[in-house]
Length: 425
Image (tube, rainbow, N blue to C red; front, top):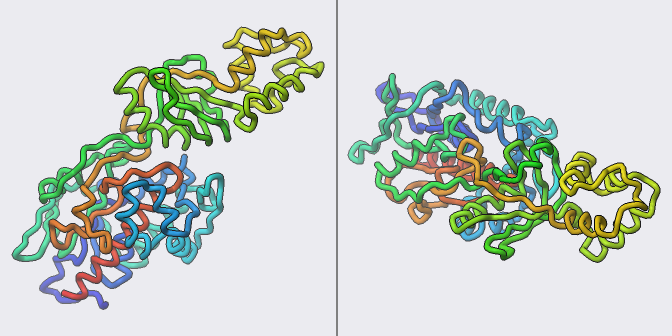
């Protein structure tokens, strides 16, 4: 498809993409590479601001599940909607797309894929280069105030403080409510409602947990690579899972906690919620009793013996919490203290205060009702020529690269199909 050169129509773009996040950049570059004349509008000083924060600044690109059905099972009930989208551009295609542009990836625990540079800036720079290479027109510091559609003209008008842009198709990629300081303030939901779409109310989906427990503040910055966390409400265990846990000044986070946060939030509505952390999940209770007894046969100080399995920082904090002297020789630890210590290490109790807010959320839930989207093209069933991608969709996804894969897949398909739409008209 050749770019349109008709001077009479030069003020009307083929595709306008609103939002320069990962989905928006992918959509814009894909449409432009297919020959469409593309305008990308971004309210920040440059595209990709939130992308630079993902994965703790390392950018968890995707999860290594190239089989489409296996990957979609991680999106739970919403996964069935995404089949045709991921068949066109799934994990395999995403890895190949970035590899063709010089981005090599490496795999870490639970299938998480990161750039070998361990820098989200690598991803942002790659996408920006692709936008430049494909000739996308970029307007930054352009906060959109309104989006309208003229059915008669088959044209969109996108209004900002300084301009009104016209385009034959429109890709909405404004993101949800998570991390509003990056520009994700939920504007797209309002425009979608004005255009006739049903929007499911927003909730923070992947968000750190604040604790009432105070002694953990001294552990801020400590990561436990493999623990088991159980969630308790009204005296009953509601959920348990293994994974990585990170202590913060406010409480706890990390993939394990983020993936539990929606459940924790729901349970908090009914009353107090407690967490217990098994810091030695590699042993069941019986095996750990034997293992600990073996450790305590040495002449080492207690705090030194325990560091065989547990970080010294955590050992010190737990011994202080239990009022057990860390310099006690192992053979002098009383039977009662051995029992207390063993029980505590298998179930460290943490009291939940609340979930942190949207400013700390990784992604938000809620969004456009999925029955109103044609997932073969990512187009609206309500408004002809409108495409909806990324966090605007009401799709819950866990931590681990699934949110970005949703952006790559929906952005690519929307950009490709928007360009094809123009070519046919």
